Length: 332
Image (cartoon, rainbow, N blue to C red; front, side):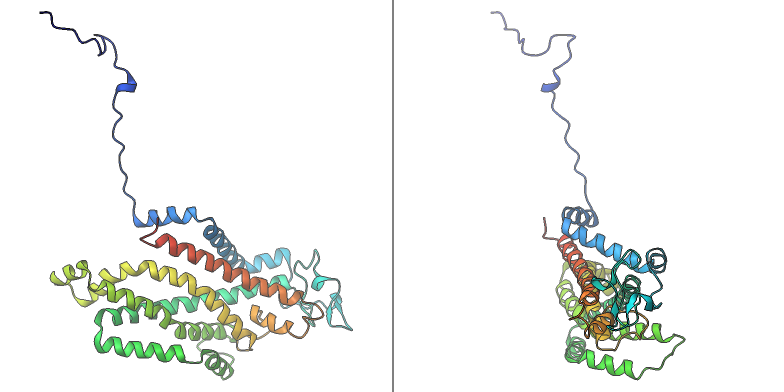
């Protein structure tokens, strides 16, 4: 009986068909949490647009002297020749906007609004960032301690938070600013008021992040990695700052991004009420306060600082929302 010959395979000396050769297995590449968050954030175009606006605002505030010299005039330099002496308003329509004055002039004094917006951004961002740093530092420490230790420590810190949340921050700030001297601690009047505003807003703002961190710490203290560190003889300081704190970076970053626009609004409110920096140092809230008496005759001077506050707060909120979604471990 003759055995059949299999002719389905390649003949001797011939190369096998590439299509029939199995493809090599694709190597799986691991990604860190940071890369995963960045890939999510890149897909959120709205958040990226908000982040781009935030970067532009920060650059405009940092380079305010350069931009003012190139495209404007000194923020405290009056231009009486551009003013209508009978009405006390800038000549021309829309607050005197022209090629020499890109955003017009302020009423009564005739100062360049473009330069005052740039220097006002410096004040708002300095106060907001300084207050955010102070709030995060105090809130994280107090929140971690309250959440990890519990018991009477948690009770004391929680009561302090409740008292501060109920305290009238605006009234206290106005009273404190009104009795401050023109200079102290080696700071001039301008920087002293900026520092006081940042300290007051930051001190009364830490309970918000403190409550968030407290809740997260209470959940993390029951996790297996904390029990493992405790069983290996790790001390409380090691568990607090080496085990719990790294796992709280995401909510801390998100809250820090979202609290900055709130601080900007608080600074603008205090400046509007006269508890901010003193003229001629510009502030967005102060510019809105100056526009109250003339907005019916020419609303331009009120619209411009109002838009500056609106765009800044919106950009920070959009970027903060996108960052929250990107750092969410349950996200896609």
